Image (cartoon, rainbow, N blue to C red; front, side, top):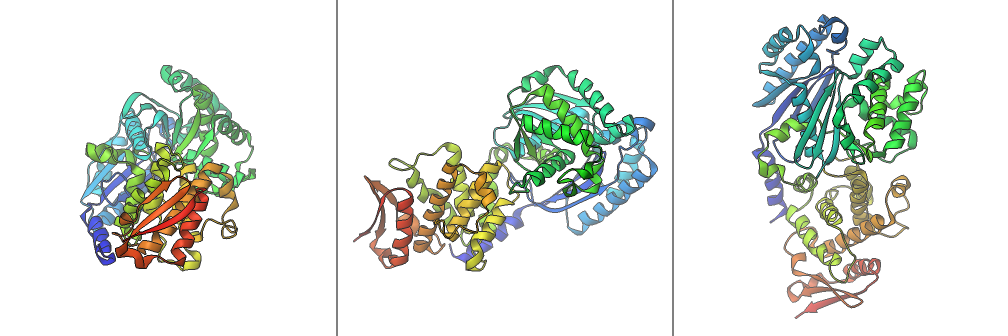
Length: 512
């Protein structure tokens, strides 16, 4: 397939998708997200949030409040206009704890539906927890643990075992609710949270399993920690920390007399600073009761969970990481078919006689191959750096941070080469966070793709005819006579670099 046909194929793929919009009316914010389609790796094409604080006074007054209702209905009117202008035919609107519990919730729904032009579904606490768990299943492969979604009005907890959703509980521990009920006293909020969490009988089953933290307040907490520790990434999804580390960090935030005096507080938006100590108090009490193996932060929540619930079963079964990388390849590489050929071509390097590889490492290698040519349009001197930055901060699902760093490094080495001399300007902070094995594998994958491109020039139909094999201490590349003209000094140099990384002697064999 020619490059032009590949571009046409990518355009046809995007054109075949039907955009889908989700309006999420929460206790703190009203958000509108338009996704490109109902796929395993949906991409937001529009995302707008308005902080209306519908849940600010529900606990004390039982009502949403006139100013908050006006803010929210004006936002819904704007979202209606946007969806109409962008031709969004599939629009879903959901409302959570504040609207569910307020005496004037039904009246707000009537006004909201008139402004939005669509029905608004009020989620029960159980349904909210189920969608939060579905969001975790959308964003992670084989999730097994307890998910917690902290909003402004409530905390939803649910036990997930792979595709199975187990017990679920809703607790009145949202950040805005706690500020309202405690008159802004964090120590009192700690006591309320501890008592409520202690009443959940099934939480003991979460001991030794991951805890998946969902919600903007907890993501802000993670962002603050990243800033304090000079962490190399700022992507929240898949970021994990030891439980004890998170408990200690939460205690520091709770005890601080003023949040702005703590390092990293400037990275937290002003809108989140009021609720952050209360979110930290809830998380601290929850982790002490739950005793999970680790805390994993997720950007996937009830909106993505709603999409997941609407998907056909076959679409759900797809790998979210590979789906995302295939789409990147379709949109940015010269040939998605060539990227897929690289997956098969590099399989031989990790077969008999080569480096061993786990199933997850194989999956990451294939993802790296799919992403390996997305920076080809950049200036040659900066392709490595730009590709590294794109991959490191891409909206990928189904991957943790060590895996994300492996992908970024592998694509970097594909352009910059694997020698230390060429990697001097590579982020030393990122190197500190990957294992020696992962760094070695990234160099090997990068070197393999560099060698492959000397044969194929990024086009399909060549490398699948030039297989790699191990013969004792030799790495052999076999080139048919039809492609003999592609042999040359640069190919041999790059192939030699690959063989050296594998501790093998290179041999290029031309078949007559």
